[in-house]
Image 1: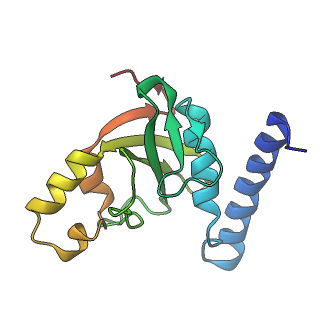
Image 2 (image 1 turned 90 degrees about the horizontal axis):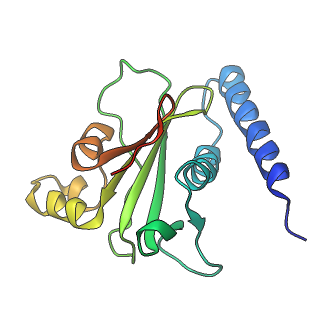
Image 3 (image 1 turned 45 degrees about the vertical axis):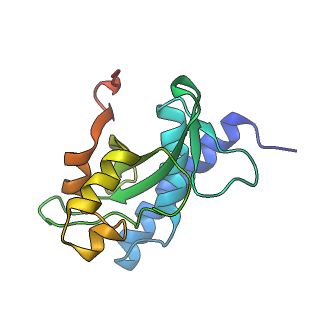
Length: 160
């Protein structure tokens, strides 16, 4: 029997707390948890739908944009003074239409979400002389330049 919506929200809230407590206690992040939290947040905050069971290469679909297939990436920012922070590698060989980047604070709460279209990411990678960029590895700053802001903690969903 699938979990009810309120149960999932409660589990994610507990996961946020556990992740933040673990980092404060152990001095390092709990592996993998930020991705799970970010996927849940992106689906909820951007009004997306989880990908169909068995589908690969993307995490969600946007029913308001012709079922656009979306990869969801996350980055938890523990120190805003550090520059050059990178996001996980974008799976360029997979079938998807856009990438959403969920930025979270040290309490694993989202504060900004950006989206970049596949064509724009591919164009940027092709223009770049960086092997990292060609493999789909980008800095947060570069992703923000390529993409656009779609949600903020202060304003919620941004139309456009």
